Length: 331
Image (cartoon, rainbow, N blue to C red):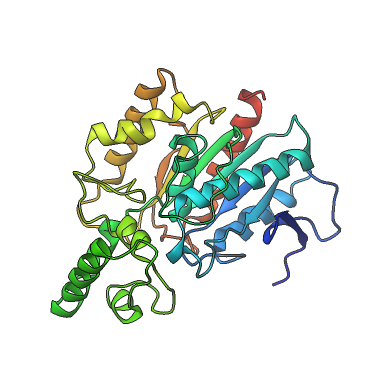
């Protein structure tokens, strides 16, 4: 299937694909920047094309979608961090703001680990705190965005635990944790071990990122990637969701969409309860309504990346959110 569009180089070596109509219409006024999860890249999340087609076929639509590639896309995630992701997203926001003009509305949307990027963008120190264990950071001050959406915000730590079903996988996990704790953070871990516990067997992973994703000291001491686990305390949520308002990087509100049949969900995950806990933390910390309760939901029957069932509801909810953002938030 052909996807007409424009490939933008928003920073050296980094690109974003903007979906257009077959006849290439003028640039729309506003932009939705989509960021995928681990192993994702261009056109790897099926509903993005559905949403783009729905928007570009509507003559009244004022939004275009950019599928953003990061250094962590495809197989790059194992040796990088959320810190680097949000710095590159910031570069893309700056590029698109210049492209669309100062009055454009810009919304960031993340799928899976892309949701971690969205929350980290909104809640981390600005610029991100210096981390000597992570390469490639420029310590860029992140610009404000007009809106933010998280889709399939699952816990990598709890998802990893689902794969530890026998002596071989448990043993490999324990070996990895022991090795990662004592080695230099950028040291690559054995592929045969990371593959055994469920990670892509062809993707190099360093000790720092493994510990961030596995977060073996959670829930008491969660690592950077452990943002969505169901056993995190309310106090921890106030330190992440609860500082979104304080950072001042979100113009409108944060919308979150769970997939009802997410294959990475643990049996104990109560999705409606988590949405309510995140809503309470977000609004309490901000001292105002910063959570989009109208659009946030569990989409019945949807898989992790919403391959088929649930796409219509997802598109409807995202379009509704974009409309509210456009009408309510003034840059």
